[in-house]
Image (cartoon, rainbow, N blue to C red; front, side, top):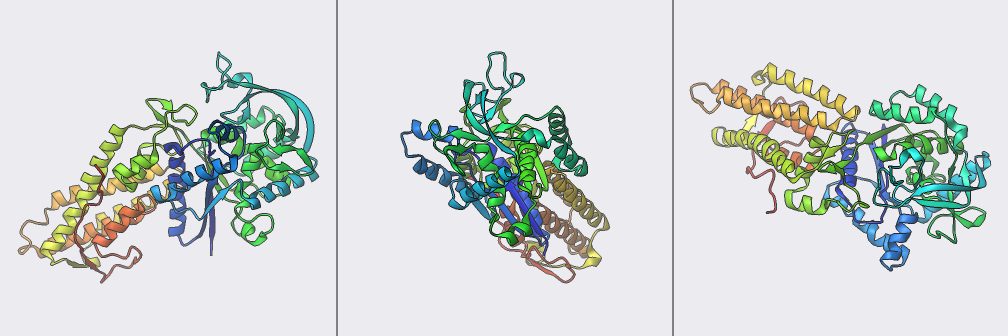
Length: 497
């Protein structure tokens, strides 16, 4: 059996979940469900990043034990699975004992390769990014461009460093051999240009006396691992690495999905670390943009988050999934607004898809006593052609990480279907033209069931309701002689007022 592995990044647990990470989860979920529909065995990983300065300080501010604090917030992120109907198989926490042991083994392998050394250093540091910042990455006031509300800190201490500079040439050679390694292309060009300019070694430890919350460095109790070094290893520790070699080899390398602010860490730092440890590089990195509100990035540190739980409670899971996947371009920034969500809900979902299903189901219910036996001779060739073309376009868009385009192609089918009903008027003179009615209904049911198969990874609950409405199992592909039995037609998109 073919296998497929996809992972999100791990969010920090220094604040409640926000809609930006929900977007990443939903995007990964679509890709995981799509590959599952192809018959592949899936590992879909997510979890929580629970070390680092931001988490440690947040716990202190709330006057809580740090472990108790991360336990509380990890549970909130775990709740996103139900809130958005996410199909992840693995939820890893970086405070898991197995993950900690894997980090220490990874450190030892990099050290054995001569890539870890100690030195004194002085840098400008953004706690929001948990990264060193150069002057070009700061604004006129000396603040981080991504976290202008936080003061830049100066760090002056002895740390362990990873010899990133050693991997400039190997990384560029790897990129050259793997032209689809990062999607979209313009993000790949960004990271290639970054690496071409030369790489600086980066710190991978912190003094325990200053920041005690982290994975202990093997053989040096005075240091804990820098959060980025520790967190990135989750992608392989979740597969049982290093002791479960079979699972690791079965599923690695995998696909990673990450925000554009993670481009450097995921596609350069982590890949160099893998090379150092003697492990295969990732298969692919999919980079998405930010969700903004009125043009401003949604961020926990900026305090303008949109509560993902409240939104799904009000509109339902699939309408919110649809909005995020259709309105927010997969690989670019997109603006969130309640007005646009309402418009998509009423227009695309309730009026377009919901009305289509209701009209077709009720016609079968009232004119065919609720049963339609599919016969190929009644299938409109134009409908068959459109379905085939849409399927190819959807598949291409998903593999190119253009989920919004895939949904747009599917909705073109639904829009065509509504026009097809109006143009053919199957309700007119059914008795006098029974073949016309059967051809119209057969063609519409064929189109709807096939389009819903395409939409299932995006809107799984909606797909299940539609299949149930038509008495279709969602799997049978050879429809000749298949009996569609229409059940009670109910609202596809009930909402809480």
